[in-house]
Length: 359
Ligand SMILES: [Zn+2]
Ligand SMILES: [Zn+2]
Image (cartoon, rainbow, N blue to C red; front, side, top):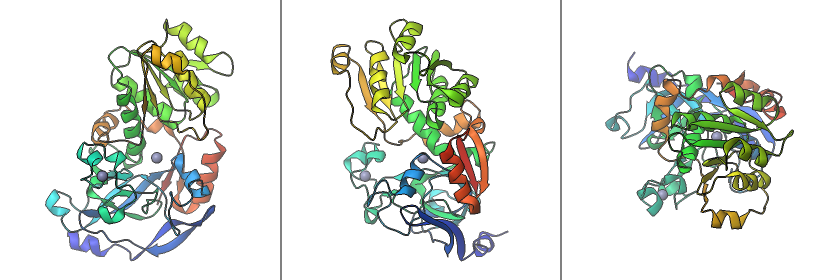
């Protein structure tokens, strides 16, 4: 089949989850978008619900994520390139390429982008300057088709399934989180919060050489961490700080906070070894207090994390060779048309980890 013929088979309209206001969403028929210069149009084959998505749908970030309605969320996806914008072919993109997307696309020339930190682009929100954050304020992938900049799609290893590849974005964030914490060979790493991100962090920490892995949590999710090879600490049964310190002789060299509460962040500092590193991917919505004297006098380094930078290309081989596995985290699969049911299953949390949608 020629590329022209395939382009010709793109339907002019597509199904998409369209937000019309906080909590107001429906599956609608909308025009299929067209790729601009250095963009590609992709057919979405698999897309996960991210923990941020219910907040975006509920309108928890008014005027920011999204900035305006109507809006199509969704940013953890994989699919097939079906149309090339101007310049994409010259950069090596082909119709039929299997790809996964990531949400951030930097402007490419601000000080942060020029130093490789495009996740902190100084032109955030300026689409006219080339910035995008797909599924957050730029149109996303809860749809049959999505347009992405060539900076925000990555070609897949042939052995990696599209379902697992849809997890590239969160897996790349987990890898960035682990790298920010400077996990070294043989280090003991404690992780707080066995949600999808905590379980990906667990696998990434092992992939970069951690010696021991401890997970703090409770219930089914902690049991999942045990199945993935972590030593477990149930915070509903014991004081997690005292228990982690008892198990690790003076604390772990690295603590990674994935629970997103001020209490967990304070516990991360309390349990950390002298001179240790703490990475924080959970976003606390309230203020809290930290043991500041311990931070200062024990030279503990605290690293914030915003999405990822540069770790999509690094995480793909680890996903392809099974050092990091998305498969055990996929608990539910729905057709895109059943988005409301899928969101409900995700939010009920009874055993739901990663919920997959198939457009
Ligand atoms: Zn996400
Ligand atoms: Zn920039």
